[in-house]
Image (tube, rainbow, N blue to C red; front, side, top):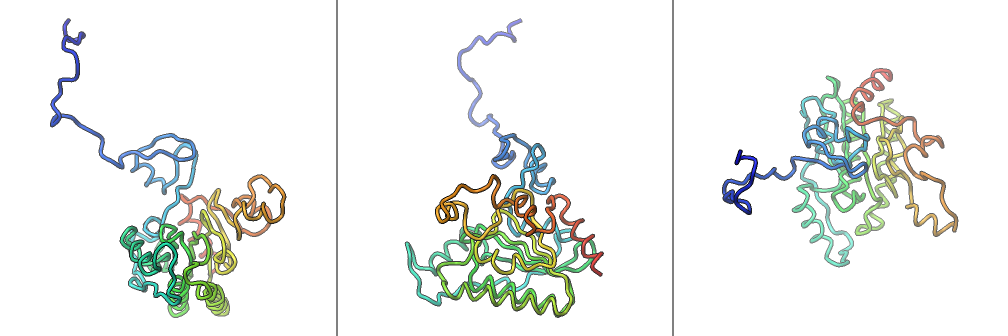
Length: 280
């Protein structure tokens, strides 16, 4: 019965014979700390199968979820920021943009595209928080404006997926101008009676909240998303009072009338299609 007894001390397996699980095979939910297979997490629209926590995702993931078979045509894919103010903080602004492009593979904080969603054409603009905190600069405003122009030209519904820390400080007033610019374009969309749906994800704050994110014919959000203008800490220090529990969560904002409904990401594509069918 020697196979039940370890006769030799230590591990005898040669290094070349050892087997390790490849990186990225498992995903641990940051909310409930439970582990699931990465493929299972992706098939569940990047939500936790245990607690339904919605992982923060970018344009690649949203496009794959919403566009049929991930088939779409990207608009203005090569547009990048200039340096209108010759801005320098810990590094020059052009250097920061270049390093962020290298690190993320993104050109700026929003990507715009059009394609079929449940066999109906739609134009989508989706923000990427990984690019300088999803901040809104000149490129973000211009790409959104051009995406709205495409909706007007093709008479297709427009979906804006927001995830942003607000206006980009490196462009100062040029960033703030994008609030008026995108809002004016959305007014043209309303005049043409073309549906505009705004999806707010975690987090949506600052000038983005104060402009296009809250101007939808329908303003919707994902569960648990942080939605507000200034952050909770800034508000608390300004008014000198403790804030209500869950303040600035999507559920709190819905209860106070600033959202139309909250939608689970797994149901997002079907809910959007149903909503657009009703608006025809």
